[in-house]
Image: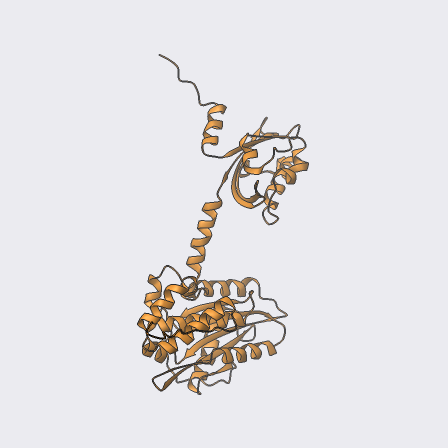
Length: 384
């Protein structure tokens, strides 16, 4: 009987090349580095072969944010291998490397450490694969899972989680954090009269105005159909809270007229401070909610900062735990990702084209930062 040949190193090499993986090896003594021929196809150059531990950053052109893990691992192998745990004999790293087009691309590195005996490492064998498409798809899915489909803001679950984690881990003792709950007054009437597509456009417009009022570092989310939440981080001056609240009242006050009737939307805002009113998300939320209901009971279109003597409001407005607008769940793209489609749908379903056109122009102006827009109407002359 013919004896089957064992699976050898050449077989591994051929399979790796078929999978477009790049194989490499670091011989710890005498500190030499070798790579398969397809290294150059990925990175546009042959690697330096001598003094690997000193030239690692000239061999792997690593993204500054990703390089520490590999550098520390190589340094530990070289200087104190006896401190390596058994688990560290196999290591998997995901990092960005600069490719032949001088672009950072995600790679997954699998590293196996081999020993001469039980103590002295001899070689580090590696194989890396391009996972850039996989990583981008994952980031897209994560974005979609974290974002509210209509507005592009954080959804309720993500906003609550981010605020909770920030308050637990990053709250600075010498600075304050402010939690805003923002409720849009009059939205139901606008939505009922003009239709839900017009209502979607209103919410998308107001959401952009809210987001632009705050810093990129603040956490801004939509927690219900017409309700939003914001955490302003690290406030050094309390005047900033009043300033932001007043800006919101100004920017969120809108009117829509149709058939001689005017429909207005505005904002009611409740505010709580960390650590003054609590250090946990639930405490701050309940107190900001208390202040919000107080505003809604006393005329709306205003803001209130929670304090212990603030009366309990009799106003009852059931909080929306699930999305009020179920139709948004069925869409694959948000309003601002699919503006053209929304424009035609709004125009098709609207009861008042003039009002719809004004809103559409405002939304497009906000999205593309256009300060002035014109509509030119052409009239047929002479029987044309």
